[in-house]
Length: 304
Image (tube, rainbow, N blue to C red):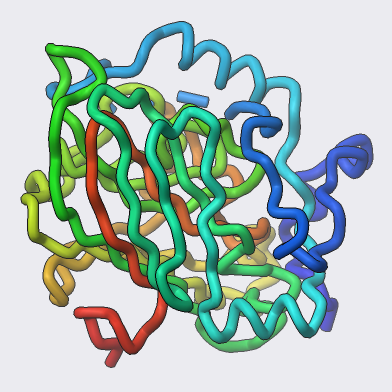
């Protein structure tokens, strides 16, 4: 069996190799600056009912996505993969964040954004999912990634007309640091202000849950499994089954099949099918105080 998942090779041309990130090593000495990362596409409602980013920010992101491919998957070193297995994730703060996010303990973050802060995304410094090590086609078993966020306070939004909020999601790199998870290629997220979910969707998202309240803890997970028709010989049999699930205060509260998004009205699911490295992503807009937890012992939701 190949060491790499069988689906990513067909989706990436040879010219893309030049934008690969360096191998993961000594990340403590050289955490990547997301300000240098370029942007990603677009899709349900035409606008959000509670807040909207500028058209200029969206266009910058789309232009980048059209010109810069996703990073090819990497084979993590034993040291790096061990850090991921023990949930030693650290935040990478974008230049667009007026505030601060820090790891207060292994796998535990605390952060805030200033009142009026524009959209930005805080990513984990390492992927939570490596297809080269975690793909069901390599492991021959299901792989789940998950983390939680608690909202401590919501203050003034980016403009007097918009509310503040937070989103929880995942993203493939490179992802534009001035865009929330789910708005661009290789991203998905669920938003506090209206409860909508976004998958590679720059418009208004899709109805999913109710708005998050201050004091609530929400979680988001992705489950990657072998397809049921893996032995059929069909091309589709080489794609992972991917299910996204949402939790609220420790209880499962809905989810969806990733491939529901594959239709003419959506932005597709590029980068999210288990064939690219995936990072935890927290989007912020306006003034927000929050905590996040990547360590299972600290989750309100307990895996079965």
